[in-house]
Image (cartoon, rainbow, N blue to C red; front, side, top):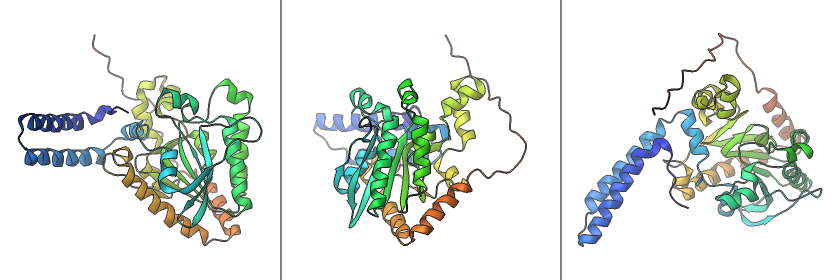
Length: 334
């Protein structure tokens, strides 16, 4: 896949182009320029660290949607040995936007379930751009019940803009499928660990997100609505998505502070897509640590802890209502 540059990453692209040009010139002239290249590479790394340390909420949403970011299948291949994928909901079809099966994390067998996006047009069409159909949620529930039957911990990877919003989803009762998952996940007497690895969009994410622990990668987001959707509703203009992203408190630090997420998993400088191996190692460490803690809890305590966790969400403090009118969008010049 060709390099994909986010709008705010132009300074990084300029430095990388200089490095590439210097290397090409040195090779063409038969001379070595290791000191100059090393200096520019050090400057590039420092610029990347500084840039990503000051991202706005909207810029973090852009990173969460980066097309080269590791997806569920990437984490499964890197983290779980002996993975055996299980297909179908036993009612209608096998939804490829939700992947699930059994694998081993060290010596512990795990039921792994996650939403999956595509890398190109063909694979995106196959998995519906990561937006599950009702049969995807029913497949996930079938696998979770199987895990509960054999006392196997469940790990879910969340990366979806939301459930499929089209007529097919309504015809096959997507709201009912998500609602049943919410109810049944509260009843499963095994440890459940959810990790938001990219986008965590609304009920589409929550349909596999009822867990004892919710972890979130540093540049992922988790929100009741997309910034564009929020802006379209409040201000009738999707151009205010950056303002909406800030108001929604959807970034990892905000979610941990609000008690919605339990732990922030740091990412390599520049995001998980710049160093998937390092990102995978960080996810592995968080998985092993949290699963070890959850496995010590008896089934009754797992159920009570999961229920209590979600009962306290939504506590708020009354205060002055902030203005809902964002600054005007500047007109584009002719």
